[in-house]
Length: 314
Ligand SMILES: [Zn+2]
Image (cartoon, rainbow, N blue to C red):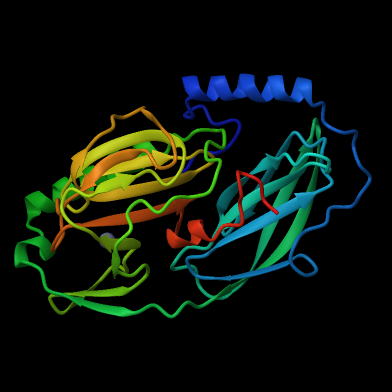
């Protein structure tokens, strides 16, 4: 559903993208990239192996490919765009954020990475071991009409899902996030990511985000820089904001009482984008914070653990 291919015609290059492209071009003319190094790619992990649990984010590095023009991975049919890493005094490398979906089956899978340099392309292969996460079971009691949807509500829900799918099919082709990730609200985590949900006695979809309980009207901050791709007022999510951080990376903020941004707005890490509320299907005021990384639903708190300081990976 994410269009990340270079050839994709559905991807819109926004004004910010253009500004960033100009900035990158300017920077690369000031700091010319080093000559092609003969160093073989040195993947992190052990012997090209990575492992992580369901819902985690893995940082995959491809080094010694300074002259690469595009680096792109494929994992379980999902595309992982890699971005260039600038570190003063070191050969450039490429980094990809690999999200393990909360429902990826445990097992070992291949992450194949294509490194393009002009017309030439080569393929690297990594093994990724997906381990089972122990998700909790939550029992929730909600008004019957919020769980068992009537025909009209089901139709509304389907239309809304489609609208979101279409909006998220467009994403910034440039990495927009930079510094450390910010927790949007500090509060009590009331709904745990990945938990199996039993609503009024019926098993429902697992919880695809984290719920943070906070008083009505508490400020909600954007976790990082990005573009507001869509703001919604939907049957389940209530008032919600989808922030596009580029390269198929989205964060979502639901059940807001108030939205303080508009579609297409540029936001920076820590900027207040809304207020905590209980709109949509909610039992009380809280923020539902969700993350989608190239189609994978990952634990939002995994972002805070990412080893990026001032935008630079170790
Ligand atoms: Zn939630």
